[in-house]
Image 1 (cartoon, one colour):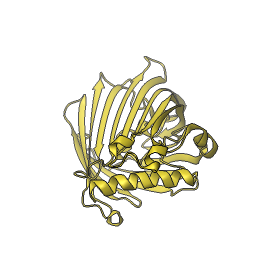
Image 2 (cartoon, rainbow, N blue to C red):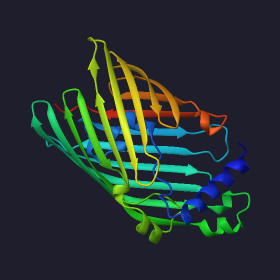
Image 3 (cartoon, rainbow, N blue to C red):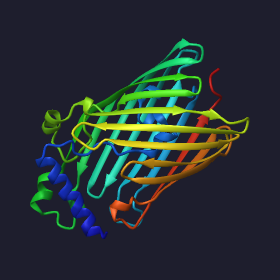
Length: 300
């Protein structure tokens, strides 16, 4: 796919979604949530009970000009001896002429409901900013481009709950209060999108094979009203809680392989390689890298 065709498809997709009053662009599925569940669900802020900085970067369809680029930055901090935590989450997505930015502050609380059993609650509040820059198209004077050109900003946020008992955990979240689609004007978005239109559920269980090895299957399910729902299933193998590898299957989008290691007690790195989905007819695959930095030891 050359750059002219790719940019043209971006424009056509935006125009089509606008006139159909559809959901437009919902936040893309993020494999990085397998290593940082706070990305999808504000309830998991501070769930590791240690201050942590997370940086994630994804380049999709490497070599295709204008292809999607995604960057995440989160910071989590437990508040002393309390069961409360605070966090900051920043996401930026570019796709050809489209740029979507989200910045949110988060507050979370952990409630003990039994021996090694906890309920987690979280809420994020912030802003969403969307830009369509027709100057990045080959024909910025096209009437469709002129119609879409511009930017908008809106109040945004999300809520979530989580449950953990022993090695099992489950979560549910409404990750966005507004649709982050640059194709829709604010009034249109208000008429066509409800926070209940996009929800994420998750399940995970860690099975300890022996003192060295453990396996963790993890499932995410993304519900979109009047749109295509999506399931994502991953399996992670960990050795001595330092080295890990695994595979992620994403419905409609194919297979991702990942690996990583803890470079120290305070620093770890992960790399993900996604194969092009057979139906996409794109010659290039996708690359992701994440870095986590811990500050101090986990709260006992």
